[in-house]
Length: 246
Image (cartoon, rainbow, N blue to C red; front, side, top):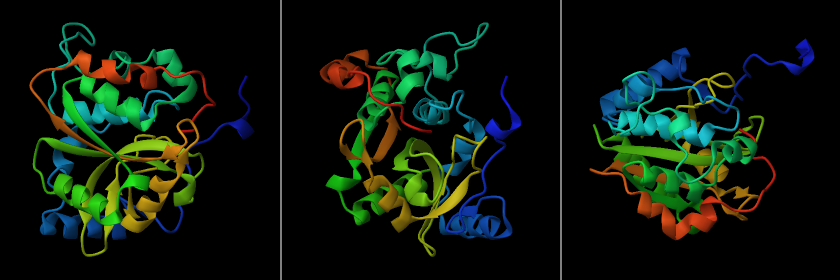
C-alpha cells in the first residue's frame, strides 16, 4: 500500500517560471495574442492531454501534436472512433520499453514520422539560440500545420526530475518567453519559460544518447510512412538503459 509520504499532488513552480493561469501569465497570454505569436495555441489547447504514464511524456506530447494537426491514425481507438492515444504509438518501440525508459529525441522523431507527420529534429548542442528562436516564432505564428515540441532537462528549469518532452503553445516576443504546455499536468501546470533558460535546459546531455536534447518541428503530411522508421530502427530499439525521469 502506498503511504501518504510517498504520494504527491503537484509541485510548486520555481520562481523563474510563470504559471499560465496566474495574473502575470494571463497578461502575457493577452500580449502574445496581440503580437500574433499564439496562432498555434488554439489547435493545441483543443487537444491538450495529460500523459497517461509517468514515463510517457514523449508519447503524450506526440498525442497532443498529432491530434492538433488533424492526423487520422487509420486505426480504431475505442468503439468506432479513430483517434490518437498513447497505446497507438507502438510502431517503433514496444510500449513496455517506453514505460521503462522513456524515449530519446531520435525515437520521438521516428514515432512522429511513422504516424503521418514530417519531423525535423534539432539538437541544442548542434544549433544556435537564434535558430531555436526562429523555429519557435515560426511555429507560434502558424495558424495550422506546425507544432514545436521540446526535449529538455527539468533540472535546468529548477524542477524535479530530469528528461522531459512537452509541446510549446506560443511565444511572447517582448519578454522572450515560451509557453510550455507541460503534459505532466499532475505535476506542473502550463507555464511561461524564459527562452534562454529553455535553451539551457535543451543543452543538457541525455544520458541515454550522450548527446544534447533539443526540439522537433512537426508538420502534417498526407500519409503515414512506416518505412521512415527503418533507417533508424537500431536507434529506436537500443539496448536497455536507465529510466529517464518524466
